[in-house]
Image (cartoon, rainbow, N blue to C red):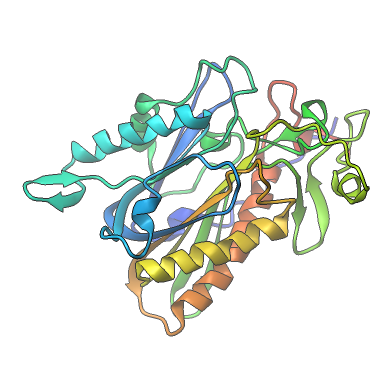
Length: 331
């Protein structure tokens, strides 16, 4: 079997000053959570495209609603059980006096989204509030760990032909630096039903494997047939993303950036946004750099950063529990 080396690190979400990223990965089965901390607050928008989402506090991010800044964003495995991670993050922030000022109380604002990974190992083992606390303790402004860690620990891809032909997914990050000190970065936890392609080359990177399990074959041809035999069960797939920038955005602009960032999912994942996905992208702004036509420029870059992060998740993943990673397959 080949041994594919992970690609060199080319920047990630923490390239945006003011953000820290921390993972918690269970040792008892492949699952975990990822926390993006913005302790000074970040303007945040969200766009939910999948038909089976699992989220917390996303209504608050609607531009018509009051609170504009969040103090963390949570991505978690464990399906709906994983939303408990956010409670631990709230406790961690409260202990440090961080949150939205409500009278003499500070209330941490922590939106969250989950993906389904309960099919790998014992489903009673899932991220909880203590996992959220641990992820916060591990958070760093340094290099973002990628691959089968955190919210990507139990992620799989290529499930439309059945789990016996699926592959290991993971979490990846990427950053773009534009003129004028502008940084746009992305983090993606990839647990897709379909296949992953590199948009720059159109190369099939990961997805449904061949019948012998040794190569990536993909399910695109199957979907073009008149009556495809889909083997996926509902709610078993979702890709979660966070995009961030140091450009000043308000909540409406951040929401538009989150919408445009979904283009990155659609470029790299085929199909995306299915009735069984909970595909969700958050967009965060630390608001340090002023830019004309900010939402347009940042949104375009965000889509590219997301697609790069998705591909990196596959290149950095490691196999587990009968699901080989790309590095485990024949060239």
